[in-house]
Image (tube, rainbow, N blue to C red; front, top):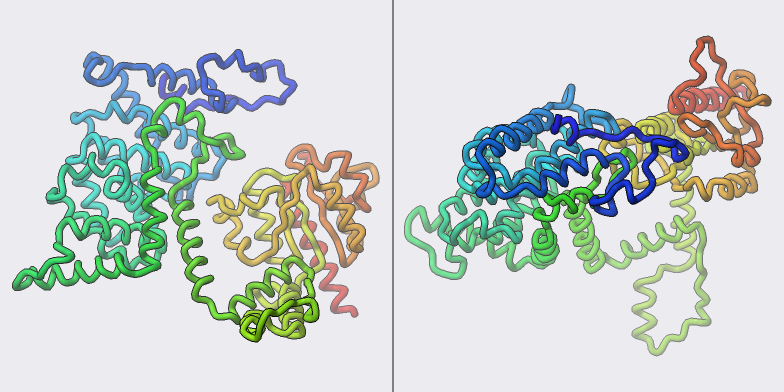
Length: 552
């Protein structure tokens, strides 16, 4: 029952429900950031966090309660997603696995030598599963804590894993994050007991091949690890040893010298070092730390995964290097893109530019193209925006999904919009594009279609602005005046407004709608899924435009 409570998720009631807990006094003893769907398990986590340490606990409580609970949680955590696909965020399976790994992080201090081998045999295989970044975060935190406590058991398996050549990119990412924390982070002294630890050479042998990885994230951390560990096994400033040892040292010395002296490597290494120094797994394993992690739209913990942080770091370093080295024409191209996206040109009045001397004039001319060339470049850029990735001209159809909040529906609409070459897709939050389930369902459509963010509070004004631009607002809603989809003639410039998953289009937005349409139904269920109904409407619009084009 304790295991069930640790993964339990409260039912979400309406705000007006008598059962809905809103008063803070009902949550006495819980952190302020505790989410409303985690109240029950929060009290259980609080109880477990107050248990004494292993040395002060009876063997019966430790083995028959704590260890039993941990192994049952491991059973939940080690369920492989069906057909290799990641669990959809918001699903029951996703919630149970996320909460089980969080509970294990809190209980990691109770992993003793007698169950360490059983635990390690489950943890590392779980890293091969196709899991979301949030779940992987807790797997990595748990593994780091266990490796610190049992470096011989977990360290040996880690070395075996990192030297494999059949790892998936997800596995490599997790292994690199764990290795970074144990090697260059604040926990390095817990893993390597001295600079002569024989495992240092084993880790170098495992990490070295990943310097050539096609995955930038893993390659970046491999560089950091090699830079830290090579000087511990090779005299990077001394003379080479005779024989084969000389050749081995020469290779490692050459790698180290490049990592040490190359400007880009140094810049990236300094930024990564800060990440690992600030990576605090101890607080992530506390009662307060776990419940203070922000949640996603499905009310599950959504911590910042180091993969995302390092990716941002890589992009920042790349941009810095590119900005320093880019030729003038490339810098001008970026200016043109920015100007085109802003959809306006700030013309330069040559007479108003006060040049101090001819040198300034020369430098100015190197950096700024003639205004005619700039206009031409922006015009070309804007013309390209009229076509999709397949070279087909985009339709004048804007699909507005600002009232939709479920990720699968948004992802499905993105895929449909790309297939039928819609002008753009309007979403409530563009950050949803980064979620793994959105990427999986949309099938990379977000890379090929234009998206715009319009939140619900700004939707009414946006709709009126589109009307002023000549668009007809068509709402997909069952009303007394709705027309049948098959009998509706779509205007060429159309905004298709989709309603909320259950409530439809709120009445305040109907005032901005020019026409409501509905899909004829033959069954008894009241309505279709919003993505399905949106896809049917998009196809009907597309069919009419194709017929119009053939006729004209």
